[in-house]
Image 1 (cartoon, helix red, strand yellow):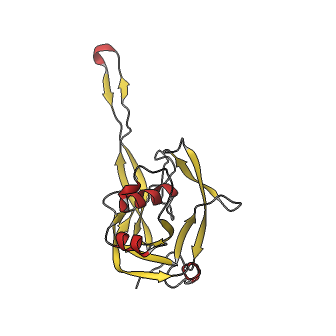
Image 2 (cartoon, one colour):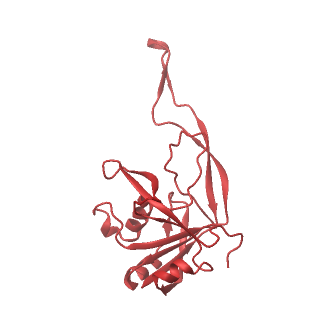
Image 3 (cartoon, helix red, strand yellow):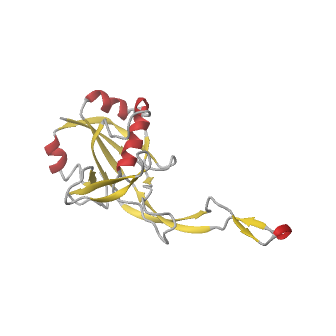
Length: 198
């Protein structure tokens, strides 16, 4: 049995695992293991000092209306030196990145016990940046795993299944665990990107 909490908001940003020095970086359409672990630790802070695992979120599903391209001005962390001796100057050049922001994202988080779902339903979450807040619905849905996978009218969207098999691909590196590669495969239920939400 799964206890599902629905989160929604006007927009959301997922940090891509590709280098920010790419000419264009787009938000990914799924939550990486590190983002799921971060959401879980926000909801359940007692897990902050535990190993890098996902303990309470058993399943998830993400959808949105569209991706809006946003430009962001950045500066590198380091400084560039120019000139010699007394004429030396230091500068940090500016660059512009184009990033994708999800419009009207909807995220379902599934837990295996009602107590965790109730606790999660009383809190907001953020996908990657603190200003991209998603708020919970009051209702907690009680369903089985099969319905979560087959009800494409209610639970449509993208879900990264966190396992390594012949369908898996690299989704990032875990900096909390000696840069260990993270793998998963993408489950798509129904039409994952909708033009209108109920």
